[in-house]
Image (cartoon, one colour):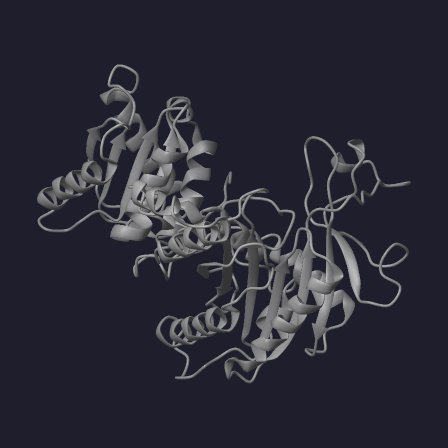
Length: 443
């Protein structure tokens, strides 16, 4: 981020800092350094405005009631700012912080109060330099509604030629051997014309299946949000919907029988009532194909035995009949780069192979928290993150696996136990707060 600026900086009007380490390990001077580092680097990255230069700060114990602690902290900010609550909570966590503490903070912000949260590790903050703060601000900016980067119009003509909705979808399964746990689904889609601002929908469903049960409703939600954003933020006419849908679906391990069902379900996006043409692309992350450059120019990637970012292989080792290709979209400083496998399962947009490959590569460059290209397109990368954060959608006090459920299980058969646990976990899955539902809280 040296000499770089954000495309659309956000604004932090009021914020608070909570420290979950002892005062003798992270003292008041460390907090002052944190505040000054954040403010000074915000100015460098395109004038992110931070109005409050002396935020409320509290030292708390991670063993206490996190929700009550954050509520008191927010009340102190409200009192200080004449009735206005914070836009951002910055939490400093110990290096050995438990996942539970992180989950409770995120649950409070994203589910309960609709306030953006940013967690930092104490040793990272104490040694922070400009590069560290730039990485932190990349995340904060999009969480508050800003945009970090947009794709080059010349490299993404497919996106800018007409109104396009890019969708990324993913399903995460419970661990092996767990029978009474649901699968978690996530579908994300852009709402802006540059395909860089995404919103997400996520749900819990029956475990051990790759089919997204509520895909039609989730896509309808994205289309509605797309229309609203186009009308309210980009000043389009009412009902300005997408004319083109590009649907990326991540599948780690799936049989060919399941693959056909996934394709049929993706094509069912046509039933959402929008007159849009669809391109459906299956993205496979986990496969054992590797590429090694031969007679390549000695750039940094070649010296490590890797092909350059942007390398496409679409003949020789692909499927003999179907439209598929391998794309190595990212460079690496260590080890061997792993390409991703793309299979175009359905296509009625009229793109040629070069257009689809260039589009996939361009979408690998728009990840909000990265300064280089990533291994898969940003929409499916976001969907993967949303799925992995399913824990924040449950009440940290533990409403699913209580002693009441355990006592009830003593009188049930094994099959009834499994269904009871599954149903309770699905019912305990909480939606996002309305304020966070339209923001990229997951970055």
